[in-house]
Image 1 (cartoon, rainbow, N blue to C red):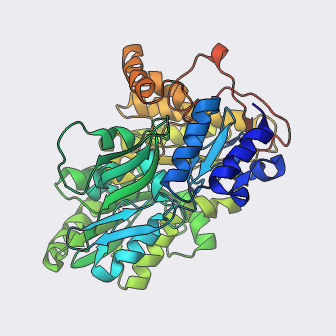
Image 2 (cartoon, rainbow, N blue to C red):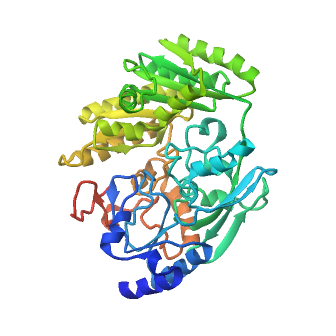
Image 3 (cartoon, rainbow, N blue to C red):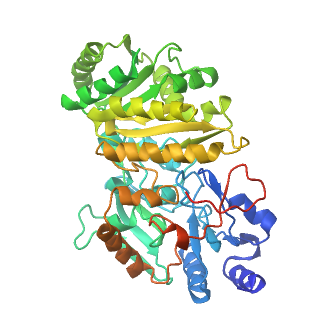
Length: 481
């Protein structure tokens, strides 16, 4: 590959100011929110679908890997260019193209920030339901790629439940339309295949999304526990009694203390766990449901249960929950977020074992969870300046994933597989299962140029990763993760 020639060809497509090829510029794009880094050879900023198509055609002719990137908030390394190549940053494709109030849908470009869509449709009493903790900065294209979830997915589902149609650039540069504005399109569910494919099958350049109507009333309660076991049992009891909250979140003692030092959200510093429980619906429905939930909490030894009295109090409680990842920066300079899922009745047992994993490896682990879905997010704290600590963290993460699978769960609820979890795919899938998935990948991308090294496990001896861990400075270090 002649880098100078490729740079000029890319500039001919998108303009000179929209191509980065010098290492001092491309190094900015070497990392997402995962703990590894790798530098792309080029970073390109298209302004529309035709630009993306032409870039992909060029890469296809030259045999250059392609990596799509949104806001860089992904936690499984999905946007890390392990084989170098051309990174296509979609941040300039950030327009809301259409808001259809009567049909409750929106058409957006992939670079639209998740929260901005809800802000745009709020005057019509509508909202976009999937709301990751990074909602204020993550983009909808990235949400589609990772099949993102969020706090309210226990009631509303994850991204795939809200995507009606996609415009996609395939690995040969062809532009196709999948799905559409109708609720139940006929034929194969190609939208479903594309959502959650992590940029390995195509690049999404337009998204048709379902919008939800705001409920008449919304209320949030906080339940305070002296035992994380009791909090976990309460989660299973609430769902088991036929109550479907719009959100049911758990935080442990370490998370609570970190948040209170920075946000002052009103969580008790001496609690071992809190549950945040939100209900939406008719006012009369909430009046009946909240006492039922309160009783279930007290049956499981809750120390106190209180309902947010004002909108400000409710928003502060949720601000605290969504600020955990940032708040624990006061405890350790870095953290590694896991993303396993377990059956709800197994929550107490699994959380106990997660804490044991941390103790056995001399690591602090802060536990937060989309508990209503059984989706755990242990945050393993570490300092990359301490030799060998990151390796211990990664090993602990693998133990947690195996623990989740052994409990009848899975290795990811919303963060995707990426390079973080691909070697754990065999915990869930047989060799024949993985081969069937690889056939789909090969059908869309026969040259293997789209986001290589992601999702599929590769034998260690055949794997070459241009990655280095956080804290490794300028040392390029291959690492098996």
